[in-house]
Image 1: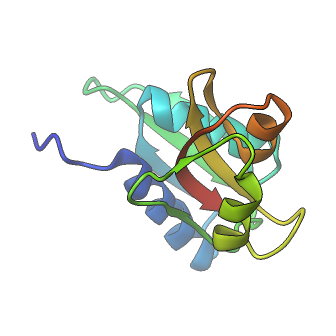
Image 2: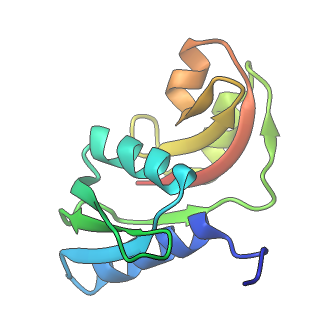
Length: 130
């Protein structure tokens, strides 16, 4: 298997495609990272729910969409953002204040840009959604 597979990009592409086609169900490869991101999306109301499907090969997540995703994508390269520069990244990737989220990897785990800002920590940009 190719180690260069970007599971985040694959997942976001799948979500966006199914959302665009008006489909309410899709499956994405299960990894710790995709689980963390799906959990954030669920918490912030971008999807209804997701569940683990055991396919005997690492598993998949069955995702239940809600028609709430306008756009999402992976951010590459994974730019580092300092704790006092979140607004710069927000202006670059999301349409307006209070619209959308940046998903970031920090030393305290995967979280949104606003959570990282509240905790006064920097991180690396992974993805955006709105």
